[in-house]
Length: 280
Image 1 (spheres, helix red, strand yellow):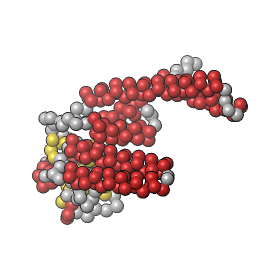
Image 2 (cartoon, rainbow, N blue to C red):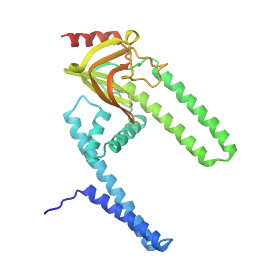
Image 3 (cartoon, rainbow, N blue to C red):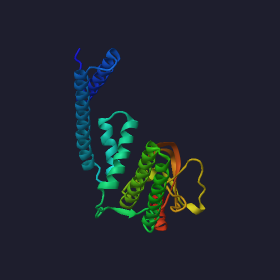
């Protein structure tokens, strides 16, 4: 019987073996042998680096193939299936895709898309100012908490709070840039409904029951709101679905979504366009 094993699985197996050997060395000698520890530490680092390089190479390869076959989809929508071709664990691949998307929009995404088949944007007017205020408040809070905790002589807590504040700022910057650069798009069979880095879903016209003015609609427990700052990003549209939909919001999973509430600049024009599609 022929036994085959992939390169990534072989590297993972060798990495686990090196970890076990180092643990056994520590347990048997109490402090470990200097030569053994150095060799095993170097082997673990090399194997982990090779594993990461192979994973990145495979992800880039699949991403380029998907980008050619799915021209209407953007970076987050293509990155996740590309990662899932390399990492079979769904939770790990989704977590890596989310964090990679966050870093991409926070630090690398600056150029606006040109000539995209755009229908509308999410709350483009004034949204940057609202998020700018929250980022400024986070900076003030980080400065105040840093001064307070430093006087209490808790360096670990100071670093934790600093890291949490910095991550929150990076998240808000990435989400804002993603909101402004990821418009709702319509093709011949459905719409790409996006909300920054929080969520992205493709909904065929055949799956839609109706589109309502949010002020006159009745959201329920099966309604998902595409809005982080609800008081400053009030939804103005509610899309009702014929069948429940499974939806991922960052690290949360909504298994039975029947309505999606969101905000668009030209809500009335979008609703008329969608009504024509649903009644034709």
